Length: 374
View 1 (tube, helix red, strand yellow):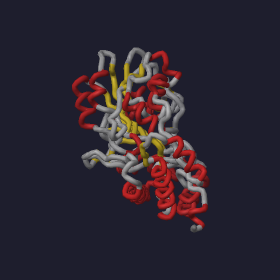
View 2: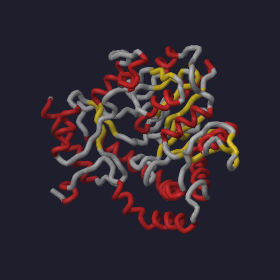
View 3: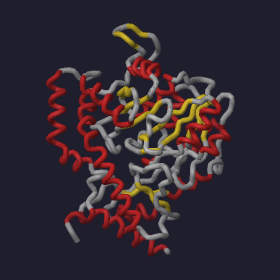
View 4: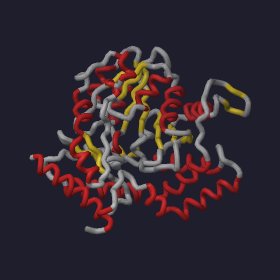
């Protein structure tokens, strides 16, 4: 057994990523420190411009984190009390949380069984006179069915907000997600495919009026110093995080390619009785997470932990069954596809730095466990 195989295998190896980029990153960080300009400066503006260019959006505005990106997007669209926003129950809590934070009502629709993304047919059933927007999540790095979602939005005059927090670089019909709807939101949490050294986020849009409103809201509702035209918040991307992201953006496509290679090796190496990720036509998958499905996933997770291999459950309790949303009146069984996924999904380690030896070790242990259960 090699030394690599004896080491614990984490979900994401941020230390190894840093060691690869250390000289470039430290140069950029020192440049910021020596500038004495740490908020809304040159690095932030450069990153906004390059990120907008990368996703083919007209405008981009850096914010403090991905959750703030969603909140500010909703506020900029004028969504608040009395409004309903349709979204998926199978996502990180923030997607539903932000709707409630602006005073609107989250309305959940079930997911596609194969992709785990919003099912447009289920979304169409949830539209009412109070519906103002759809938050579509490109979950785990695979694009949602944007044509079908946008068709519904156009029919009912709804806004489309893309939660692309897990999907930087993902494409739908050859176009990168985030710039396909009215507004797109990204998270640069450290473990994301494009990760900062702390919290960071971005909002993109092709509408100049919306971009101006976002910039106002992220800076205390101010368009000029000490002059406030709305109630905003303090949510500005700081210069150090922007500097880090500028460097990492240069390597993003290479890193995404490596993720896809690892996913391919997993899918080819894991035995057929394991349900593996399915990529739908016209969509791409950048594998922010590589998730398998099996009945005894909790036992497999325990087994892998004993072997020094990390794994993660996404997401054990769908949003409609979270205690905080009890008042919405949902119950177990309302969204069978989401509940089915929540009971079966297990994510395996995946990051560009994951060695082939480590990949093979993971495949061997998963296959061994599953074969013993059959």
